[in-house]
Image (cartoon, rainbow over all chains, first blue to last red; front, side, top):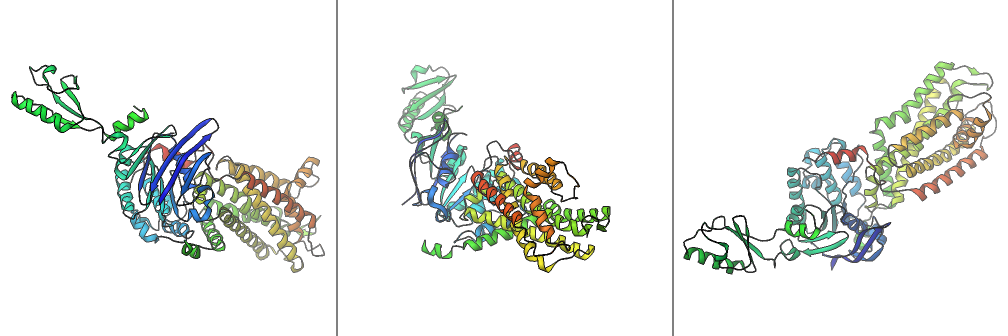
Length: 297
Length: 280
């Protein structure tokens, strides 16, 4: 059974359309990333699924519940890691996990969670003494304390420095090993690519592409680009493949079959005693796809 | 699933847990503990020192016998009205209320825990104040009027807890809540004869004093500790007036309560989060 099934989700704030007909299906155990620029509708979509907001239209089933009416039984099975969540700063890490854990019928052991997010040495420290990164890791532990079937992660590493991000990714990778369904939102392409089984790109309230990190936006079918420096004394017309463009002294070949084009090029080069300097073959990166789809520069 | 339902914590257990946790937070917030518990006791020491603990001629009772119940009411109102308004508004700014909404605890159970904690602290502050009055200033406690004192106290703190939640509901952010509570409680305390009885007040002051619920609370509670009076001292009109204020405030608080920070709220915490990258 799909963990999340959303069809035609719509939400407006006054005249501003935040989400405009979003369809998402997420299977149990899947890590799904909703990727998009700021203001694309990611947080609105997730907050509707969490039950924080009501939708204007569309059908929504999450773990078999309608989040807006699921109430306590629904919230016992989800975990939410808010972008700007907090707990009472006067409590210790262990106290916070024990209090929030006490609200759930199932719960994960507080010490185990503290180890999982790397706060062992801060277990009895007041939350107000934690660094920003440590507080975000506590957030993650609080999202997991009820042993949820589904975890929402809203921009888990926004504002992190690079080493804090790597550390957070390490923790999140451990989670995926637990078999939890995870819906994460992010505006970092590398984060989606690194963590997710499947990615949907959302822009201006609609899903513009969906797929695995490898196939997203037709990347698997997209043409490869072969680049090399034009050998001295050779004119572009002599290159034996079609669809070439010359960019300075670099030749770019756009090829449906990189193997065939490379074979033709290297046969030609070897036969004429030429060296193809700076030869490289590239596939469209997720970044290329993302920038093209969201029109961001 | 049925297994989950069986192991689900009872609502009573959740309220009890929130109650204990809110108490813990209170004692770890020195400024709240100071203004609720210590500051009213300091006022008692000051007033008896300034006015002398002699018999007040017009009233026929000592200074401490007059001031202690009034200051106990003041402390109880700080514990409920001021602390609930500020604590709840800041919890909303920080995203704590939003987090609570994403957990299985029924929202009203969370609010009940918060309110119960403030009522308990109000009771504690009142007992400490009356105890200090008895031990150090010879204040008399009258067994005959204790039921009236307790009933008045319970109704009064409930009324001010509801008013505190109303201020929390209508405060645009956590910085506004202390401004609203201070700007209302202090002037109203003056015109409600909490700090000293005003002889022949201007008419408007008397009308305003009679309008706000603090004077009804203080008068009904104080008369239950007045040895010159007879009878059980149940002040039904005042108790009814406190109930009316409490019910109206409670309904308005429910009507306007918000769980999420208002758009554009920049609490200290948020400003800090935005300004620099989070380090490991």
